[in-house]
Length: 71
Image (cartoon, rainbow, N blue to C red; front, side):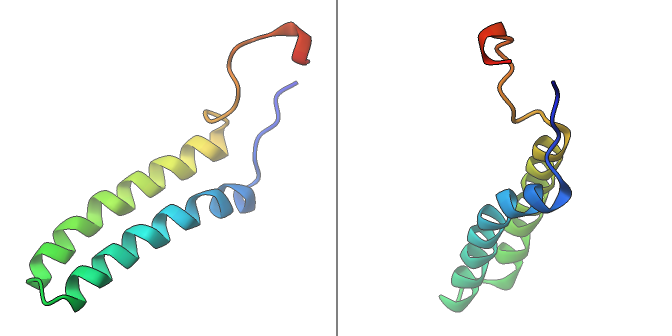
């Protein structure tokens, strides 16, 4: 039985990681780092967050052992 996570569940799983990444960028900017560095860090954070959302939404983050005892 394959169960896919809903979009809401996928977003709720990814939001903490995205929030940490954005908070890191804001903290760097508040410390007085050149804004260019902050915006150079932001695209990888967004890219990984989108990949994580796809993984959770598509079921790639589920148990893939195929153990028949768990079904």
